[in-house]
Amino acid sequence: MRAQSVLAIGTIALILLSSAVFSQADILSSGAIAAKSDMALAKNAIAEMESAEFNTTRVKDLYQTTQQLFDAQVAYEKSNGTASYEAVAEKSQEIVRIKNLAFQISDELNALRDVLEDRKKEIDITEPMELYTSAKADLDAERYEGAKEKISQAYSRITEIEAGTTTSRVLTEASKTVFQRARESWKEILIAAIIIVIAFSFGFDRIWIYYKKIQMERLTLEKKIIEDLLERTQNDYFNKGKLSETGYHIKIKKYGELIRDINRQLPLIREEIEERRGILGKKARKRD
Picture 1 (cartoon, helix red, strand yellow):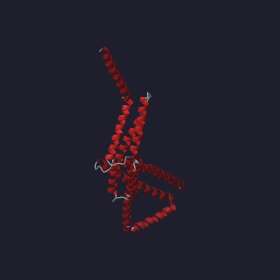
Picture 2 (cartoon, one colour; picture 1 turned 135 degrees about the vertical axis):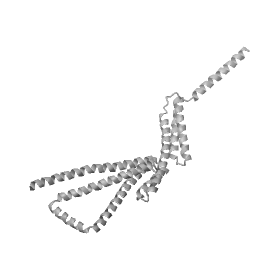
Picture 3 (cartoon, helix red, strand yellow; picture 1 turned 120 degrees about the vertical axis):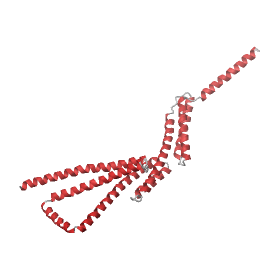
Picture 4 (tube, one colour; picture 1 turned 45 degrees about the horizontal axis):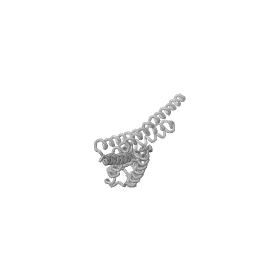
């Protein structure tokens, strides 16, 4: 009886010991558990992309590589090695980043399409439309970074074309007004032309200054037009919701560059005028 009890106790102890050894081999380290959690988020990101009908070849290939890295590190850890799951975490996070980028690009493309539709009656949208189409193809091919760059280029071209078209329109209208006035005041213009010829004979510098003043007036007009377009962009974004955040910042940046360029030119022209006036003053003193 005593021998049977000892045998039973020994058997139970052996089973418990074996179970403990087996459980210890299957328990994952905290690093492996964290990596597995990252992979679960990555897998969920892929499912979200599939649900939204994005192509997922790129992220699935990346996930497969991540799974292989994870399995290799777990095996190494079970053989008493020191495993590192850093690469697993990085690749899992990359999948989530790609998912977020895909949804962001999709939203930005929709916003760009609406902007093009809104502007097509006012400007020539051929170039921006080509960039939109190319960006959409990049989205379908999972080239999200390329799509983002082309969206940025499209907004830049829209901004440039808007500024150029509006400026040309205003200047054309101004030219028409001048032409109409010229028809009504041809005698005065003829007299002015004679005066200019005389002035040219005696003072080229004065003609040059007059030209530079016209150049300054044109730049000042362009600046006012761009400022009006900038104000319209702010209204479209903040009040009407017609622009995406990305589109808004791109357009604001471009308008800012155009205004800074004009602000850079104006003082230079003023300086040139003052220098030429100084030359005129010296010539006048010599004649005296």
